[in-house]
Image 1: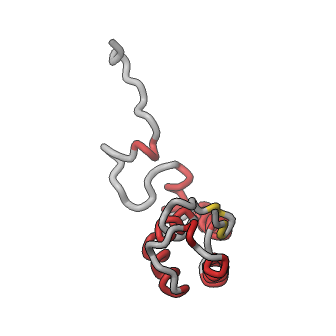
Image 2: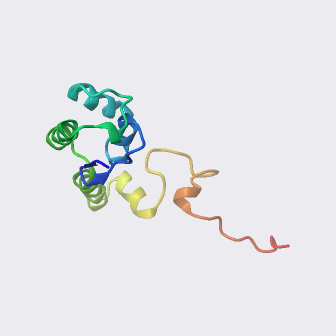
Length: 122
């Protein structure tokens, strides 16, 4: 089991998919990283050599912001929006969708469960 950026990658998955378990790395970035390190996309994590794991770790840690640093940056960005009380910051504070979605009929994830109506119970 390879450990990169503080995440244990599942050993039975292809490396292209396993890298997406790291917060901040999706499939396109995973492919780009593997292309730069010259590792085959269809190689399993358990088949990686120690040199390949080291190359991946070095590539990710030097060029990309992932896991804790990225989470911290995102939360700081949201906190900044809240402190300057801009529209997006207010939407974050109130718990409503931030990116212009309609809230009349959807947004249940943000708004929570529907309030109970009187006389609705059977």
